[in-house]
Length: 213
Image 1 (cartoon, rainbow, N blue to C red):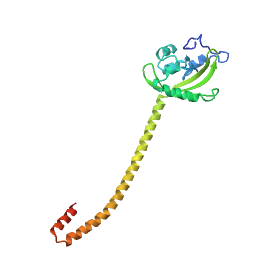
Image 2: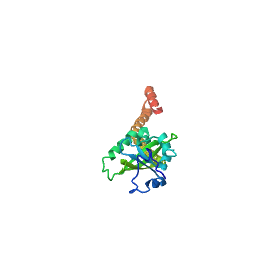
Image 3: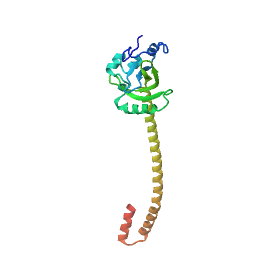
Image 4: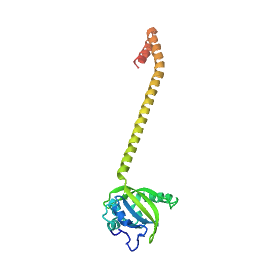
């Protein structure tokens, strides 16, 4: 099986003495895999069919026409700055042992937006120089479940907060009722005394208004 190169087999060849049959193995992977240049904008040197299908493309040529020829062509425009920043931060580590990990959205050939996760390891291939070997997977469903869990947690927190607020409100009203009841009882008691003992019609009218109120 010929390697599905983006730039042509003559421009990029694996060292078969060290990596025999790597292109055949890559095409058997159920997971997406691609190799891109370590130099920006990350020219894609190889991409397997599983990764092409993730973007809704049939093969590397279809991918090249509809998605692009560089790593940054693969990334959703709104996620490009964040992805660059994450990769730059991770690049400060030890390149010999580093495994970069980024998540970003992609736009498929049919326009559907999906979320992917990739793990890239820097390497050096004869004829290509510094490259990244990247495993890429679609995590849209998983992210959806995680978002649902987050929304569920936020809802549970909001309900608990509302419950605590109701308890506090009930306690406040109970205390206020007690505090108000005491002086009102005294006022009504004094008003009853006035109604029984006063002979002044005007005073009795006021007292009756107090009782009705």
